[in-house]
Each structure stands twice: as structure tokens, then as C-alpha cells.
Length: 473
Image (cartoon, rainbow, N blue to C red; front, side, top):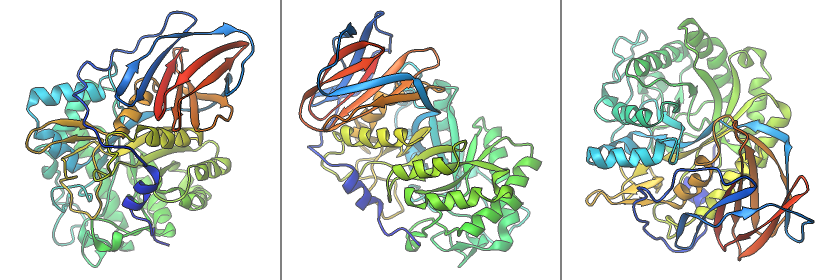
């Protein structure tokens, strides 16, 4: 069954709001993260006019906790974290490329450098998505099963250079790639817009993936994972590059073609299946139930447009050793709270992480003030907006939500137990590889205080209304 809910409808229910507000360029507004003095908790807050603002430290004390208690248990650990980021769509790269080099370098330092935002898990598109300057693949024209025409020339002027610049800022950047559609000649109907794959083109398509991975690696942009198809269960009514992949088709492609092709090509690139909504978790279970599929894949990618994050836990219950990644979700540039809906996004991220998500990757890293370039039907906004004329940078509420996670939670961190119900407050906790601990608190309601409790120690933390707070200790 195809998805009936549009991105716009999902965004209306997942992002509520206040008033859009432009934020000043971050530059040095986010200080380099440092550990607090021994025994203290450092706190950064986004709320009202504050953006990742350093509050006074809070000390742990001996005693009993009062009301609104959140109890922490670092000894009870869960999944390992890969990281956070957003998508280098063709549109995002085009938008970044329009900046002056010095301005882009400063913005990339802010977004990707480990001492700043530290975004480190980003998505790329294999050919055109709905956020591209044009519809294209890497092998256009008549059928070419031997891939003699294959070329990534489209990506060389501005797509690949943007990713190389990001890798200079963060050499540990993890990239995964997704196609929105195979080349039109591989599909029923002959178009990249909607439709479905022809089974007899599975072998050429596996070769297409291998060629893509080899070509990107040769350009200094290695890709660590691929998904078979962005949103396998919808063709978007032919309004944009898309392709239906039934369950049996995806399984057959992975076990008989893509998996063997990557192996024979000596590629260590991982395969992530599904790359679609929470409500399709049962399909992911059924696919991994086939040992021939499971041989080549042990990871699932989820989107949050339909269903709930708790459905990822249902998948985890069936396959506790499988990896779970959240691979798409972004703001609506027409929403009045585009720049201020940080609490809504932090709630979403918290639910993903509390339901076994190991990474969170948003949608477009950057678009212009009208959500362009865009050949598709959706009003998505960038994680940042770069005005097409003034080049002014506006940071979305999603950006500020990401800051509280990506600046504090390091690759290899483990989520640990945080328990307690406090009205309007969501919480999630982590221990970094160096032993430092992070607690992210999202208070979507009125101002209140919470009591933190761990190993006989307590601390009282004041939460501002509509805030996201990250605590490090």
C-alpha cells in the first residue's frame, strides 16, 4: 500500500509553533564544548531569544529527590550512536555553491567541524531527487546494460566539491547514498518520474551502484552505505523521481544482485533496506527473515512521515542485533515557526533515539527562501536557509535541535537509561567514549524544574518554557 500522507501533512503534525524569527549568523556564537568542573553540570539552552546559550553550572548534591524526578542509570546501556546530519541533495549543494568561498568555509566550519556542530552522518542522492536542479541519472538514453555511458559529470561542478569541502572540516564524515529512481530506461514506462523497476534490469542496476561507488571514491568522496530506494512504497503519483519496489523485488535485488556485486567489486559498502516509514517495520522483519538477504544486510533505514517511532522498537524486538537509522525528515519553509520549532524537533529526535535509532539524518542541508531548487511537489525547507539574493543565512528550529545533540553526543556514545515521567518533558541520556555524560531535556510546556537523580546524588535543573537543554557532566 502506498503512503497516503504527504510530507506537508506530516510536518503539520510534527512541528507546531510560535513565530518565525531570523537568527543572526552563528559564527562564534556556539563556544567550543568543554567539560564542566568536576562535580558540576554544564547546561546549554535554546529558548525564546536564546540560542544554545551557556547557563550557570549546577552542582550535584547529596540528598533525596523531590518532585519531577528523572533518574539516570549509566550502568544500563542501549544502542551505540553513529551520529547526526542532513542531506547533500543536488539542491543543497547548488545552494551552498552560490555562497562566496570565504562565507561557505565559515558556514561549513560551523556545521561540520567537530569543535562546532560536528555533523557527521550525511546523505547523498544517486542521481536526481525531488530536490535537484533537473531530472537526471548517471546513464541517460537508450538501454545500456553494460554501463558504457555511465558518468557522474553532472555532480562534478558543485555536488562533489561541496562534499569534499565538508570532509575537510570533518574527515570522519559518514556518507550514505540513496537513489530516488533508476535510469528511466530500466523502468516500466521509461521515465524516472514514478513507475516501477523492470526485473530484467536488476543486474545492470547493481552494476550502476558499483560504478557510482567507485566513481565517488575516485573523486575523494567515499560512501559507506547505500539504500536500495528512497521510499520503496510510493511512486509519488509520477510527480517527481520515484520508484515502487515491492518487498519481493527489494529482497531479490539485494540477495541476487546488489549484495553479490558489492562483494565481487571488493566494496565494503553496507546495504540498508526499506528507507521508508515507521509503519513498514513488519516488511523489514520479513526481508531479514530470508537468510540470503540477511547475509548481505543487517540494517534498516526509517522515515517518520507515517506511523510512530515506537514501531522501530518492534523491529528491534525481532532483530535486536540489527542497526536502525533515521534517514529523512525536515522542516516546511512555509511554516510560521520554521526558525523556532526546536522543541518539536528535539521531541522527534528524542523519540527516535529512545526507540533504538543509531543516527538521525535530516533532509536538505540548505535551500533558498522559497525552498528551491525543487522539481517536486513538497514545500520542504533547508536545515538552513540561504537567501538567493542577499545570501543571508537563517537557521531553522531543526538546526537548533540538532545542535544540542550533535555538539555533545560523540560517535561511539551509548544511550543509557533515563526514567521518570514529567509533564511536557522528554529526555534521553548518553555516555560518550571518554566517559563524559550527556542528558538532553526538551520542555515543550510551561517553565518548570526537574530533579535529576543518579547514584545517590541529586541536582535541580530549571527548564524554560518551550526549551531544549543539553546537560554535560
